[in-house]
Image 1 (spheres, rainbow, N blue to C red):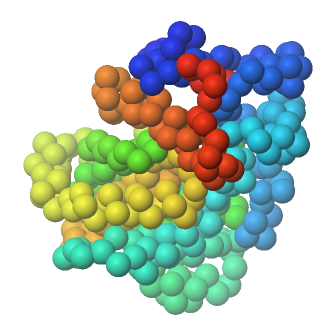
Image 2: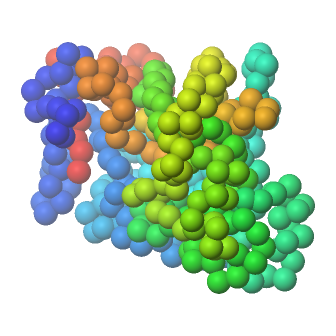
Length: 343
């Protein structure tokens, strides 16, 4: 809103945005709307976690979002960006990992490979065979431990970096959790953004390599490093200039064509219009590792004059695609402009 992404006057490609008011009946507001845009992940009240791998039926939305979901289910002709079932995988870090397995079957000509990190789902940090399970999953220390629920609740970003088995005892990370390999990546992270058929990326500073992490005060105290990934990341304040210099090697290694092909594959598999993912490049191998995936990110690293028109174009592209699938002979719209509603 602050960046001018939802104007009430026609955009350059003929979109007019209309905010939804959850205090008023949904049906009457959507009668003249062509497209519904939402970010349901911001309307989650609670996620009931269990040891089962699926929790989509345990997501509790605000009343307004529940009403909106019921409306879309009973009006299949309503074009939704993106349908509620399509965003469920990005709520679940385990499901994300399973999806990323499919990258191994992606035929891409490159001297590098793109993949997800090695991982293991854990229901309890006290289970007696945890060390053996980590070994079987080829997870050497350090590990990064994340809640299985990926977004929508406050604890979704409470994480830890663990350096030995002893540190798993009483670990303060919500369960069930996903344990991932920690990838040495020279503190260089690439944030990729997918807007319809367009792909953008930005470079951000990230956590240091494992050897540097082990020298941080928290690790020296023989404790796991606990952090909230939305607020701050563990960094080496003493050697920031050194790390910045090393990260240039990661930038030179980036295979943009490889990641773009993976982005196109993810768009097809997830059937999402607007999403983002994070890539780090493993120092030793050059592997491009996708370490995070999220729905409708802010695109704040992409300049407004680039991101906003691409955002509008992505909405129009999806609207045309949906209408084309329903009736290939149906005109886009009888009106000069298409109205997009958002809560």
